[in-house]
Length: 120
Image (tube, rainbow, N blue to C red):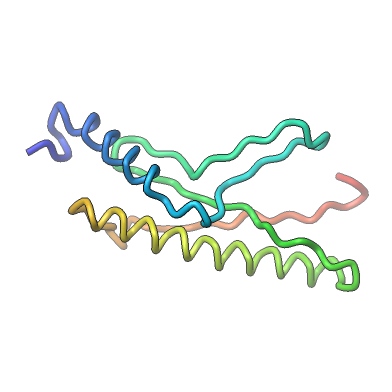
């Protein structure tokens, strides 16, 4: 078949990945990058190269001015973890529906969170 290691494997994986991304639940959050001036916006679900996929989201939490910066940051992080869990489960179900599966030993996640100090 057209599996990993065959000449046609990358083409069929790309086709499958495009179909999976097109089938993504539109209510799921994605990676969203907004410029400081807010005029430039870039969004995407993630990246893939052959069978290595990387998905991500950014927080949509709106900060509460009555909470401390630490509390707001923690709520941002919780929102990301909730969203990433939903995206990963949805992706796994789509992958399974194509006959694929996640190799749990190769799965990982990372969170990037930062705190601005003195506007930097």
